[in-house]
Length: 192
Image (cartoon, rainbow, N blue to C red; front, top):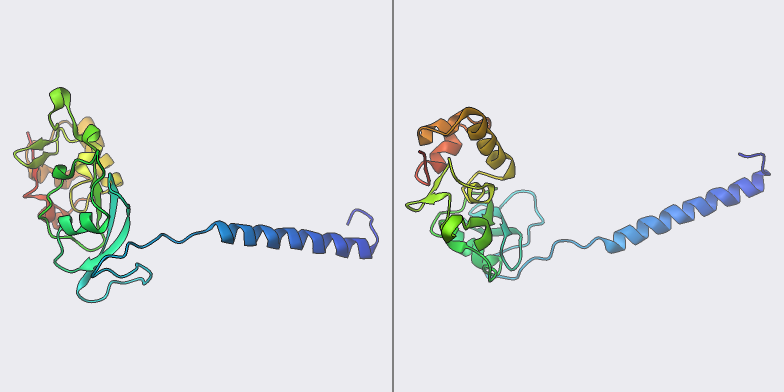
């Protein structure tokens, strides 16, 4: 090693090891686990699988405390919103179906008023309380159960490349949306 005496080589190796160990300790101290909101009926999300009778969901967007939460099975979107500390001042909580039953493993995104406001202050992708899959923004599509950022982008790419959906069932033409996902969406979406 660079023609140094063996004793100096050992010292250099020890110093490098000490530096690496110090860096690892420093990184470990910077790591902080996601804090869990203390709400009655919730458990920290530390275990891999939910216990029988509960669902694990991700609440994101314009909420006081985004994160992953465990809620009793049968809980509704309004319960998830409350677990996340409620909507922020700029949240458009009415873009969500607050009465919808939570589905295990889903992400529920609360958009801001700015995200959902279309021209003249109207919500562009919502028609009659349903999300219009031909006009909805990415944020609006992500409010649907089972639709995260990737599927929302696929829906947008499909309608831009293939033209507008003629009927809600056409959504099954999008890669990743099968019968099961469509079943959960069919009453929440509209087309043309």
